[in-house]
Picture 1 (tube, rainbow over the protein chains, first blue to last red):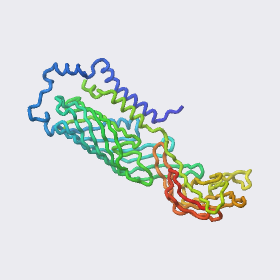
Picture 2 (cartoon, chains in turn cyan, red):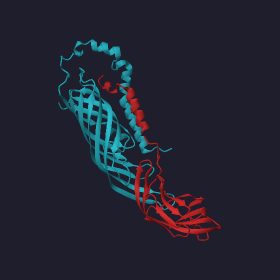
Picture 3 (cartoon, chains in turn green, blue):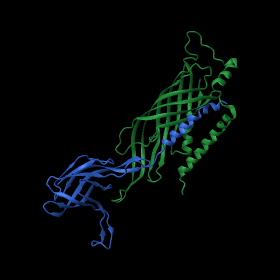
Picture 4 (cartoon, rainbow over the protein chains, first blue to last red):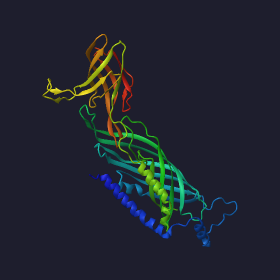
Length: 254
Length: 170
């Protein structure tokens, strides 16, 4: 039985995830979890300084119109690239917090891919290419007295135009002589897609916060190319999957 | 305590894991082979009982037991054919196929035709599991006309969908 490099990478990634997850899971099991239901009501009720103050009559929002400006960097993609994927994305997301309710955001990033097929011997390569996403988040508990920790939903539109190279293509139909190897250089694609998802944002220290997001994604358009459809799309990831995930570290500029 | 809020919903993580695993590839699920599909139409009252096809110019394998010193590699062997699937040579722009047919009419006899297909070939990426294949665009089809009297291109694009590409009349 042989173990492929991708299996080793996947196993290493699972070990890393377990190492990250276990401490939190264990401490939760020991009774340090966030209180829920009646526990939460009692706990919230006991310290008077954390009790919700009713808003003055006629005031709709607890927080100002321009509440925060935050920048975030996704850590998940670089880690996934290190341990399991042959592609990666490096993205900065800027989010404006309006009334702590509406969260318009802009994501700028660079994605690349260099993946070799395990049994077909070709390599699919996308040189570092830009992508952009724009969208709107929404925080349901916008008047919550603890504004730094919240759960939110979002919808984003993504766009990327880039070129892919496929090298060492061979084809054997079993009758004629084997075809190749040939190289396809500069296969151009222009892709548009949407993402709909939800996330958690938690302040960890002063202006620094951590958060994760998960989203469903779907390609709206990918153009047509006589040499085939794209495999990897910068900003979208592998076309084979409709699920995206990020783990962000963010900083409040103001 | 603050960090634990990030993991407040373990079931969400479980769902994420399941979704990620379910989105993993299950191997190649697409047809990689590309065939030029031809439909046969009888207009003369004759019928073809058997048909053999060989690619002309195919690299032949040395075989000392054969009278020619080579073994011909058969592309097709079909009884009472209505539809044929030819394999085109991917690294050139023309494929010649020798067809040997046993014809039944008033009597039974053998006849040969050569089918010539001219085309453009292009490599096509399918996906990471299936790899690449070669698709073709037919430019011209003709025959030597011994039995096959006419040809027409039904669908010039030859892909892995196995649509009918050409019609052969006899």
